[in-house]
Length: 177
Image 1: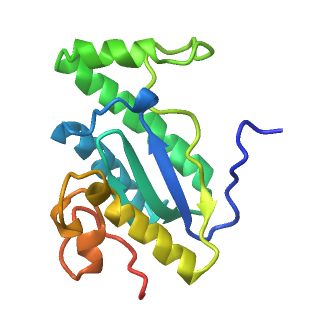
Image 2: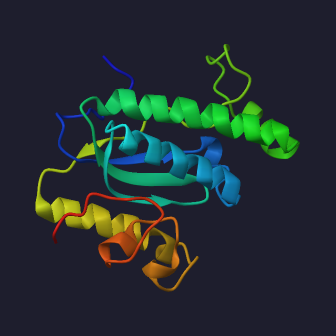
Image 3: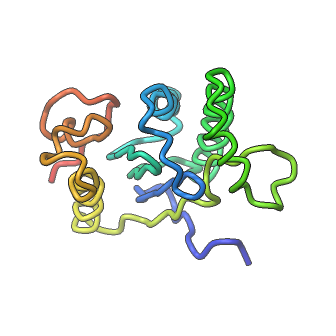
């Protein structure tokens, strides 16, 4: 039996969550959030990921996406972004964050010094238009619920603006709702 009760079902859109170990808030630093944006953009340009919605919060991100091999693409995404984040933190001598990423690393990960992401990404297949709408609303209201903004349109690390007909930081495959 696998390590997770969550499984990717086919190529339909899935709601995904990727969380930093111990919920360490690293994406408040613009250059670290940019690594996430650039990596997602790369996967889109290479036609390896269709992105329907996203939000990047200080210590996690939510996506609605699909791919021919979603588990593989998200695994590659997490691996690449973790290496890039650690490299940037080392370059900037962000020792406090690096120490925390080392401290919270799972013990069985003895082939690496740090761990950025919690294991897994909890894929949930989007099985209906109603479920898609609910997950997209959840994503877009996340910064409002956390008290970071009063209006969803004010959070720049989200696909909400795309759905309002305004330019966002990433292109998304818009679904008519």
